Image 1 (cartoon, rainbow, N blue to C red):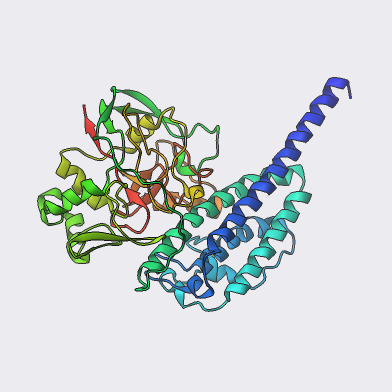
Image 2: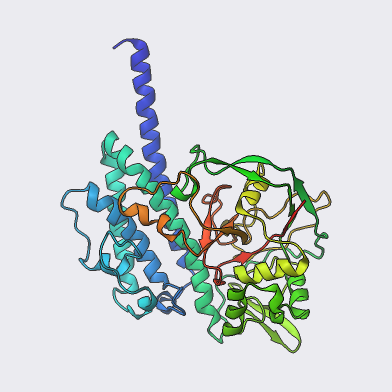
Length: 434
C-alpha cells in the first residue's frame, strides 16, 4: 500500500471510529436525559394514565427501550433474549408488523412490571446497545447506526410526551403538584403585531439530506407560494382573552363545523388548563397554579381554536410551506426544554420586528393537512409505520416547543396531531395574503 492509500485508510478508519464514539455518546446523553426528566417524580406518579392520549411515564421509559430492542438488538445480536417474553406485547405502540399490542387506552392498568423493573429493563437494553456499538463491524455500524439514530430521535419525541403527559396527570390533582420551580424573567411589554412579507415564488421545501430527518421530511421539492405575510411573533394570552371576551367560543360563523361541534361537546370556553376564578384567569403549569401571564404565548389550544381565532382577527394560519420559507436562514434558538422553564415565555420588545419565537415555546399550528410530499417513500419494514400511515385527518405543526430538545428540532421538522388535540404545547402565529 502506498503512502497516500495508507493515509486515506487511516483517515477513513478514524471517521468510522469517531462516528462510533459520537453515536455512543449521543445515545448515552439522550437516554440519561429521560432519567433526569423523572427526577422530580415519586413512584406513584409513574403509573397514572389520566386520559387515553396520555401514557404513564413508566410506559414511555419502557417503550423507548423496547424500540432499541425490537429494531436493533433482536436483529443484530444472535440469540438475544429480552428480560421478559411479554415486554414486546406490553410496550409495542402501533407497529402492527412487529406483533400484537396492549390496548393504548388502558396502559394505566399495568401495575406490573414495577417502576424498578422498568429501570432494570432500561439498563439491560443500554448495556447491550453500547456493547454492540463498541464491538460491531464497520458493515454492522453502517447497517444499524442509522436505525439507532432514529431510536435516539424517537426517544426525544417521547421525552416531550413524558412532560406533556406528566402535566396532564398533575393537572387533574386538586393539590396542584409542582414539577419544577424555575421561572423566566418577567416581560412587561410585547410589541404590536406586525407582518413580514415574502414574494410569490417557487420555493424549495423539505429536507435535503444534509442533516438527520424523518421520512416525512423527504424529498426536498419545489412548491409555488403566492405572496404572503407572516406575523413577527406568536399570539399572546392577552390577545386570546380578547377573543374569549368577544364571545369567540360562541360565534359559530368563526368555526369549522367539526370544530364548533368539538367545542360544544367538550364545553371549551378557554385553552386547556385555564379556569376563571373571581373574574381572573388562572392556569396550571408544570411550575404550579398561577394567574395567566398576559404576555406569554397562548398555548394548549386545538387547531380548531387557532383557526377560529385567526378568522376572528381577519387573518389566517400559515401553510407549512410558508412557515418553512419564513424560517429561512434564522438560526435555531429559543425557549427549549434545556431552559427548564417548561412553559412558553413572553418575547421581549422587538423594535426591528424581526421574526421571533419561530423555534421553541409552542408548536405552531399551520393550515396544512399532514400529507406526503411529492415522491414520498416509506421506510422498509416495520419502520415504515413510523410516520407514513398517519398521513390522514391530521394537521402539521412546526417549530418545536418549550418541551422539545434544541438538539431534536429542525426547520424541516413536521409534527402532526389531530385537530381536536390540546394537551401538547400548541399555539399559533398569524399569516395573511399579500
